[in-house]
Image 1 (tube, rainbow, N blue to C red):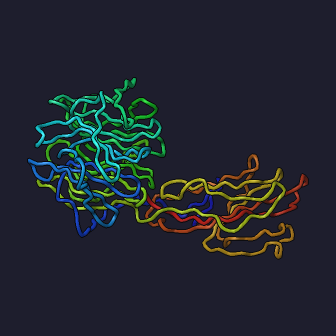
Image 2 (image 1 turned 90 degrees about the vertical axis):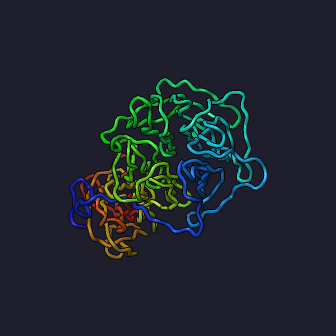
Amino acid sequence: MSQLLTSGTVLLFAASLSAQATFTQLTPATSPSPRAGAVAVTDGAVLYSFGGKPTSTTEANDLWVFDGTSWLDITPTTGPLPPTRDWYAATYDTGRGRFVLFGGRSTAAGGDLGDTWEFDGAQWTQLTPAVAPSARRWPQMAYDPQAGACILFGGQASGTFSNETWSWDGTAWTLLSPANAPSARGRGRMSYDPTRGEILYFGGKDTAAGAKNDTWIWSAGNWQQVVTAHAPTGGRFAYGMTYDLLRDRHVLFGGTVSGPTLGDCWEFDGFDWTQRSGGPAGRTGPTFAFVPGLGQTFLFGGFSAVQLGDTWSYQTATFPAAVTYGTGCTGPGGSLTLTPTTQAWTGEVFQTVAGNFGPTSLALEVWGYGQVAVPLAAVLPIAGVGCNLLTTLDVFVGPGLPAAGQWTSSLPIPNDPAAAGATLLQQVAELQFDLGGNWTGLFTTNGVSMTIGMR
């Protein structure tokens, strides 16, 4: 620790370069054949990918699952299968435990499709609701837990783009009438953000303006455009996009504006887009999804002059951690506690809250690199019974005045890869005094061990 700030924070390092997650190529023993235009969905444990376009003139209808190590063909050998297709809409209905698929394009079937299928983990079933969206390619779909329904937007049929929004509840399709909506388009992507309870749609393509670069959010039954300071260069369509739950970011990779395929990676944090560096070769139409149970985003295939069949993972190498240890002792306001309220990411602020301070007290923070267990009553007569020092005395912060019996600590962490992986220990002490200004007691919280991660 190099500097003590009067605001009650500790600056660990000088700010430097932006930290970021990275792509890593995987080498599974088996894989689907090279292809583009397939959509990845996840049940939270594994990734599913159906069909896609293995050649310039054919589509597939096989079903594969990826567990982070191996691809496995789980195409049912009995019962019906959806016709071959690519550029369909798909999502996983977590409420009902179903892989839901709609529409797409099929050379074998003669063009655009308007059928609805569900996979229950063993068999495909075609649903035949009385009302459904028209046949179309390039629609997008994501499951909205708040509505308990799959939300479908846009697409193209017979050369005409759509800006319709539909919902599917497992029984019926319903055409919705939101007050606002993106313009008619297709070939964008949708990804659901469970942290904020909303669906993101970016870009896409329309016949009038080509690649779009606007950002839209679906929430509470309506679309709202988010005006951002930055956006993927030139707009984008036919890319891959997913929401990384661990890092709280929508991740976008590849696609095209016009001409060559792109290989850049962008992330949306709910407010703005940031470009990241490095990654696989440029491509359109990759399979791309974050799997919460595996803690990683996976990319497969896509198209760049030829169909591709490579598998990649995308994730940070260092995650944050914040755990409590030891116990606090009892002061005039009760048993003192110290609780982390945020995670320690580079470039962000790590916060803790100490509680149960007495009415006439000050707070003193102690930060250190080593864990100890020193009974304070043996060296400080005013220390309460059972009050222990739990971290080495490397830096003091304060004293400060608690508010409503609480003391909030804020530690700004520099946006520096050198900080990632560092572990720091914190403890807060309550200094009790009387109305004459005399120190009458010292009491301590439990400790918090914090490890810095990088997004």
